[in-house]
Image 1: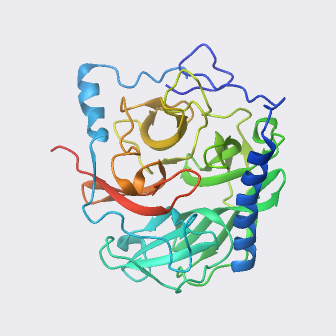
Image 2: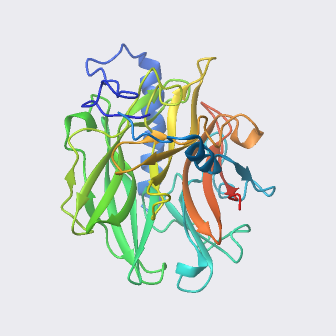
Image 3: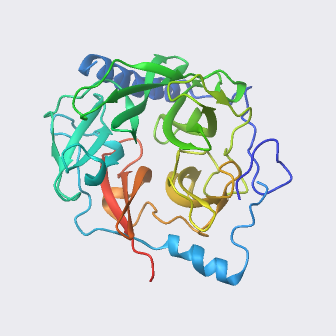
Length: 373
């Protein structure tokens, strides 16, 4: 189970971040910020728990187990970094997908970010993808998510605004055709104490849904430094709500998910989260890639399935991550962020994975869940 700092007697508690800081090796610091300096330059110049009781009975356990059997498609990885990107740090990451039923042209559309910005891909079957704008990004940004409502597509994404301390905000653009996008509006910035530290002051990894007359914006905040990678990953997951898509948003005062030494898949950080738009068996289903350290001391990320009755307190539905690093070369080191869509009776999860630590390539793949009849 996953819990908040206000719920320390229940489940897995959030470990308070040591604001006093650890003693950083100067060389590691310089390498880490050099990485994000390259990212920032590329982006700007290139375009720019207490428990829910889940599960309860043996029957519940059998039902919830249906969420635990995902299979990679044999064509994986589906999308590699664009040719202009070169090793040792080429990436295409954090996919978000529009399925044909919701698209303006009956095609599949996928958006993901590189070191240059956010790119647009198109497909006739969801398996074979082509870039729509060549190698040019749409605009600067990273970790996009597209929300569709009343014929309008809203893209939320994270944008780095400062390098020291690493600072980011969440911006929003909209489009009626997925081709022409509005100017950006900033809708969320780091303002709470737990969203800030000496080295990272960030809000990002946005996911939004509408329920109970409000927009629920889940987001990642602050960062944990990974010395073997010399970059940061999200430390906490928070929630902000508003009756208006453009805000202003009222934040929950404490994070929903954070690091805990008692949780083997969140020992370092919370990662990101996305929630299915409709409840299943009176339960909200979410996907989360926690940041952790394995038994050999290597940084890792894996995708877990969570459940909640209220969208605030989350428990594990599956005892182990459903997609893990290390089993194939293209996802040797990390399995990262994702987007899940229901296609007929099956669920398609697009995600990205990384094949190395300090040096690595990130590609996009697909796993499919076929529920038992």
